[in-house]
Structures are given as C-alpha cells and as structure tokens.
Image (cartoon, rainbow, N blue to C red; front, side, top):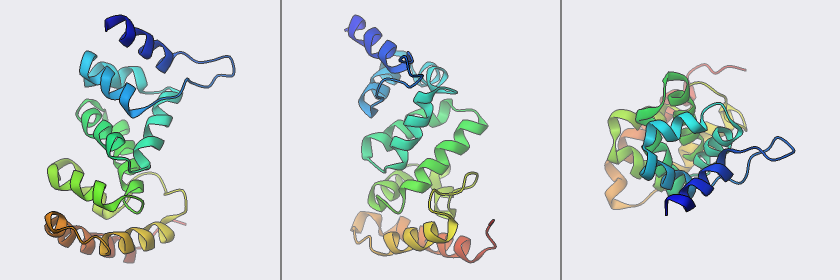
Length: 166
C-alpha cells in the first residue's frame, strides 16, 4: 500500500515533459490526505499545476472534490484558503445541493460562500455568476437543506445587488 501511495504521489506531483502534471483526481488527493495528513498534502499541492487542477476540480461541484476542499481548508494559509472559498463558490451554480450540504455541515468555515467569490472573478463574470447561483439555490427543494437555503439565498441576493468590479 505504501508503495502504491508513493507511486500515486509521485505521479500526482511530478511534471511531465510539457510542464504539465499527471492527472489529479479527488481520490488521489483524498488518499494522500488520509496517509500523510492535510498539511503535507497541501504543501505538496500549493504553487504547482496540481493546485490549479485541484481548484478546478473543486469548482466542478463534485461531492468528492468538495470533500477535498473540506479536508485541505484547515491546512491552507490565507491565500490558499481564499482560493478554496472561491472554488467552492464557483461550484454553487453547478451543484447547489452539494455546496449547500457542505455549508450546512460546517457553517463557520463555509457560509461566506453565500456571498459569492471573494477574491477571483468567476469565469463567466460576476453578473452571470450571481444570476446562475441565485437561480440554482432557489431551485433546491431538498428538505434537509431548507434551513441553509433560507440563509444563503438572501446573502446571494444582497451580494448580487452590491457594486461589482468590472
């Protein structure tokens, strides 16, 4: 098992000839976190192409990638934590039930997601982001998420009406 983990970690972090990184999966990252801890996993990811691939995975809204965000968040410094928060915010319009579940499980760290991305502009811009995020959260009809939906929706609406950068 340790050999397999070492192989996965090496494949995960060693650049190929074209300065790209071997594919990064949520499963590989979660396994490294389990075996080495969140701090070591974070240190190996940060400032590499693997970090970018990790934040893109998180922004997809996939439940396993959101679990990666939850596991890495306590180990992240301020800059990385901000990037994790933004990636989870970008996931909100795509996978509102997954994101609201995550927020509901740990409001102290994740409730700011309901105010939208704090640092980096969403790929489609702020207006499109808030339009899509508000519509997605409004359409969530899962009973266990009603309370967090009721908290999140007004925060999104308030953020959408605030002045936005160009």
